[in-house]
Every structure is written in C-alpha cells, then in structure tokens.
Image (cartoon, rainbow, N blue to C red; front, side, top):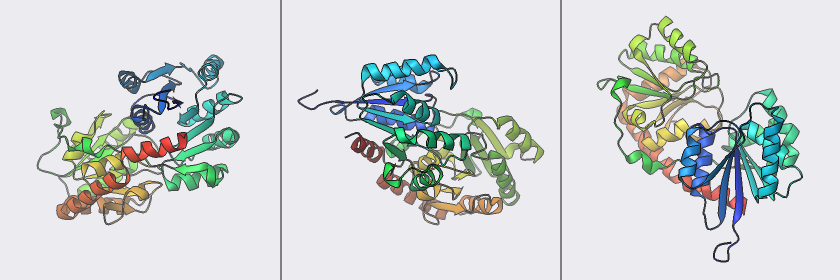
Length: 364
C-alpha cells in the first residue's frame, strides 16, 4: 500500500523474451504501468532473451521457469507454486504456450482475474484447440484488433463480451531521432528502397514478396528491397532470389534490433503477410512517416487507411501488391502526403499511453 492506495500485483507470463511484437508489448506495459497503483512481475517460460535484461534494468523482477518442453512437469510445478506463493491479483499471459500453461497453473488459485492476449489470427488447429480447451479458465481476452476479436469469437467460441480489443501502441516521438544507416547494409542513396520487415516464415510469406519485387524491378530496375528479419525460410529466400535473378536488387539485413534507420531511408514499407493480428512493422512505418503497401489481412486494414495513409490490396494478389509498391516509389509527392497522414494517425489512435491505459482499466 502506498499513500493509502492498495497496490495491485500484476504477474505477466510470456513464452520467451526475445525481441518480438508480443514481447515488446509486454515490456512497454510492465515498464509503463502506474507504479503507485500496480506492482509488475514478469515470468518467462523459456530462454533468457534481451528483453529480460532490459526489464530488470528498469526495476522489474523477472522469474525464469526454464521450461524445456510442453511436457516439462517440473516447470509446470514451479509456475504453479510461484503463483500460489505470490498470490498476484492479476495474471496476464502472452503468446499461445504461456496462455495455455498459465491458465492451467492458475486453476484453483486465489488470482482475482486471469487475462490472456491474442496477438494474431491464428490458423493452426492445435492452437485453436488449446484455446477452446482452456477458455473456461480465463476471464478476459485482449485482442490486438477488431478483426482478431471477431476471428477468435468465431474459431474458439469465446463470447464477445469476454473479448476486448486493445490495439498495439507505438512511441512516435522515438522516430524523430535520426539514426545512421550502417555502411554494411550497402543501401543506395540514388534509388528508392523498399523496407520489408518481419520474420522470414510462412506467415509473412517472403517468397511471395520476392515475386512482387521482381515485378517492380521490371518497371523500376534501380529499386532495392531491403529484408530485415530472420527465420526458417531465410535460406530458401536467398536461394530463390538468386534463381529469380534479383541479385543486387535485394539486401538481406538479417534481424536488426532497431528499424528506424531502415525506415528513415525507405520510400515505403511492403508487407505480404498471409495472416496478421496487428503488424508492428506497419505501426513503425506510420511513426516514421512513410506509407505502406500491404495485403488487407487482419488488423493490417485497421491500421492502413487505403488511399490515405497507404495502399491495401487483395490478399495473395502479387500483381496488385507490385503495382501498389511501384506507385509509392515512383510518386514521391503522393507517398509523402500519405506518410504524413500515417504519422498523425499513429499519434492520435495508436499511442503507447492509450494501450497502457486500456490495460490498466482491465486491471481495476
């Protein structure tokens, strides 16, 4: 209790603490909570990623459970014992495995409210089955977009009144600082750069993006597509790029901890995701003041206002995506106006303050 105000204990649980969208959201929540009202602790099921160290530097306790697999009974028991000893008022879980394990571990405890976060319109049947199996043990599910909320209702049977939409937030002011472009990226200064930010996996479909890149380069041979990300399709992407003859038209930057330098150099962002919740890459491009060309999937269409802050195309339509990218890189005046409007939209509708405040309202 501080100054007569009863502090509420919030225990966050997440699968890992690498630098991803869910992990960054948890970090911002845990470090921006009103500390006169809430006391945060973070539990991590696996690994010891860089965000764990950053949380501790900010004074947030991090507990690691070192779970080796979903069947690690010892880790399950450690989590269950921790929750019973600490008796947090709120358990807020992020990512599928933490959602599933956290709900089971909290059963029969004195936790006042169990909240889970849905970050994506998850197509995998195993994850949907897990949601249906454990939905009775969660009080509120936060969804990053209205699209994700309706998808979760339809696919898992959650009643709509248990699903709350809280969009991701972005620190727009952070993008005002100019960041130098590393020389090793070898980005041109006399040709447009298209930023492609995201994990190289099936969801983001980087192989399809390479097809769109080839179409764009047929019309604008100097354009360079800069891929920032790593993942299981990295090797396949590099091989396909060579087979397609893209050569110097593609830069493979790997995973980068700070995308500001790339976005400040880019003419636009391009996104070819097959499904999404609410892509942080688009929010980052909005904060940087550049437009995006993307498939209109999930929460992407709730971020981008078509023909105003960017361009949306039919999911899977490579030709349409290529044309949208070409329009943005060859019409800088229009692209600049779109980027300026995108920046204003990020400031007004997707601030970190709004995201934190909405979550605090759920905590009580």
